[in-house]
Length: 317
Image 1: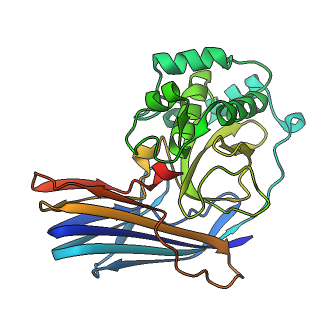
Image 2: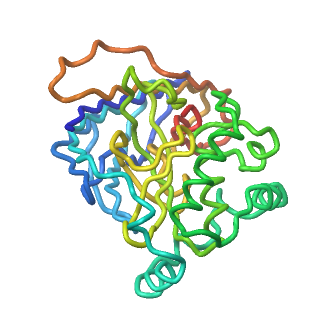
């Protein structure tokens, strides 16, 4: 399947701000069963855009705007091919000894250690005991159980947490959004010496998929775990999915802190408003009509000369 993705982020300020520096991770990856066929990034006001690859191979675009302005609009347009792959089967999956050998033969240590958002705590330890998170069965069976358990035990509630909320909030309330569920699953499986990484991107929603809980018109987050015999396998605890034939991967990292869609700073004291609109459609379809932003975030004036900003859309998934 070839998908067309349009992702528009708009920052508005009152009064005007100045001297902005920003980096974005919006270009879909080309690896595995996915190929980014085309990508275009437009910034208004116009800026000289440069790019590099970060430590996990994500494409990062960065730019600065020197003048004074009240609005910045960043639009990313992509065409991405995602090939269907068979669902992983237990009969073809290795055991724990196979996983240990796979880990020993490769460099996965960064996806085995605690990270900023995915780490142990008392609420997490209680959940781990409740789910019997221990080395039993084989890795694929256990990962599938954990994925389903998070889907069953946690309610999806839009805006119930913020982009920088610790997972303890979701654990105690037993509700959250896709970012929370991904971090919880990562924190549960890494202590079992299963390499697990955070994935940011998009999900294509079909009318017949009534169990989808993630929002259409927004970005999405899930995880990939290393499974012997299958390699990196996508687990989506928000929607109880295994395998990523409807998932479009943009960036991978230890957790959300590594891969925010936008991040930057500006100078000025202003009220700010952030809006995001995302469309994902089959590439052979007629381009969709413009849609209203999936959410709007407003903030009060910042009382420092340099204020950080980071796109907070992941919390809406």
